Image (tube, rainbow, N blue to C red; front, top):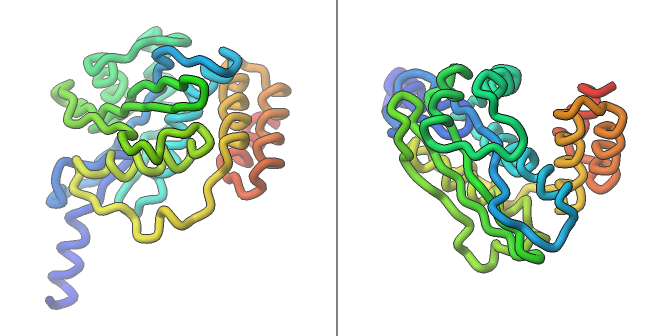
Length: 231
């Protein structure tokens, strides 16, 4: 294959924001909005932690999807504004139609939302890939593998789900993605609590949790970004 043809092929698989277009033949970048997840009934930790994970799980998913060279995430501020415009407060249930409206306002072609349940350490989650233009659910992905249902492996669970979310776009997961260090669950929990308090306007408390996340996992780039936002 000549260089000109190779460049043409490569340019045809550019995807954006979390879940890309339905086929590898997509011509233009596709923006995906990753929305909050719903706690569908969790036990074994403080309710505050589960409220925080409603933001933390999609944040983990966004971070993982954003590492893919063919993915571009919807702007966080636009997603937040769209959520507010739809009057989606804490614990809101986001169905496919609502996800499509939020995605439209955020300038996305696809939206990803879902739910989770943590039953005393057994963690199960579903993510729904919604086509914004039609409001149709293209795919539901879950952590069905029993080896990836332990809360202690939360980051790996979300990493695995991210690779499945890519499939509607015809994208291949990144080579070696599973070998990179991931934050331990304690760091994820503290980061999620930081997101929760930041969303409530309590920057001081958010900063405390972001710092704890960094203490547990010094390489946690998203927690460091959180610290910068609340300073």
